[in-house]
Length: 262
Image (cartoon, rainbow, N blue to C red; front, top):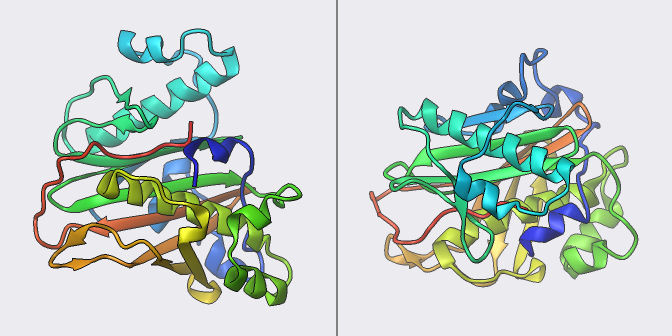
């Protein structure tokens, strides 16, 4: 479930139940969309376009040295979204650097996730006392390229996709869900998770999904966490998925959080 793979493939749409998958009213911003699949206590910010006036901290700029102009704008806008989301938690702005796994290094006591695709950049953050990890993913509303589904889906998922009702790019939705899974998994496990190690079951009418981890997360609250719950939404050609792992016992992780797809 490679973080960089988000740039290869994109997103899926759930159009068959527009009343469930579309916002109830026209949103004022991208943040108004993604917050609909995030629980209270998780702050978010999003942008539908890149702000050419956005600036980076020196350390962030160093990460993007030699990058193409479009990639630099995308990165800068996503970092701005992250800082705006952090401000909603009442915390000061600062540089958001990157770890060896390309994960954003958040301020102490903060967990979060960043995502970006064509026409959409977003970040979601929370205080670690409330949330253990966050995973969000945005993808373009398109069918997966040939050969990708076989890499993403296990036999059980492929069988479900074959009989799923038409009008929805469920293959792309599956990919997006698994990207969110990895982003929620990594800061807790600090280890790789393959596409085949997470089995997704969709609940279309509720716009939710459950994930069965074949490799349980480290012991949390006395047991290994094996089931995650996520939400999805399709809006204006963009698919959004999210997974939030609540901190039920006030656990403080020593890991850096969270992965973004760069």
